[in-house]
Image (cartoon, rainbow, N blue to C red; front, side):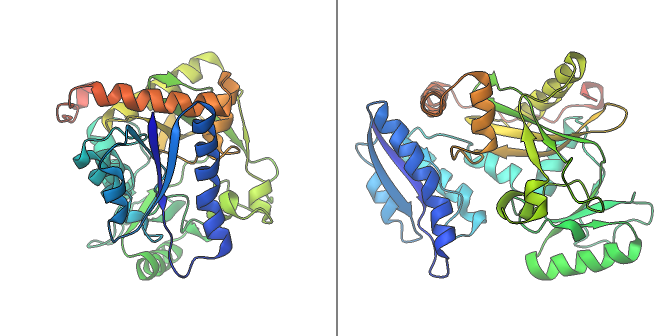
Length: 337
């Protein structure tokens, strides 16, 4: 089978580290596909659309690793849309799913309409945060992913801090979302097609004593930071069976609400009362060989090559399915809580 691996072609101001972070999964996925006997072409995506001409004929599948164009993550869904219009099967989330999940207010509205448990939230673009909004709260960019804009100072405990942080993020990122901070365990549920991988939990045990237990940008991307060493994933997570069942049930409902497809991850917090709260739904998360979803797949018993092959199989199977009917929001009686 002829497979094209799509990826962000980069920008003039990218550092060597930026380039490496994009090319590493491209190399690893390409090697896994070639080992499975596929013919592989690596195609960078730029705004000039030359990449589109290269995929329009003679391509059986696009392995979509493109997380933006020129480093602009908001363009990610446009690439998926173009591939969809070309009628070529591709891996990962659909353009619709990306549009919903990468816009946090839209995602929260969809999950809330489906009756799912999410922390209280507010978008302060036109109205100030209500006086009764619970604190502590976390202030985040509304349309970024990969923990961009999330740091220790994102958690606010006073009204003064809240107003200041909202203004700061509005200057830096435009739209902002404020969400109630839920203390507790952080659990991830990953899907590859219909397969649920073993649960993973973030171990915050090595975090500095005065630090908030969050997965910040530094925790994900800055190896020399104390937050990076203080947020280690544990998989399989040590979760009792009734709670694990509940977490998976809520995650499946969230996955369905956003028309989840391909592969992805649902991140949750579990509070002191054992209640799961959905934080994020992540289509097409990182699949470098040391990434969280890959470690979860290893715990399931898959090698890296088997995971990549399974992602291809899922994409081909989903391409054969008839288009889904529009998702209708659930009523209050449908609530999962």
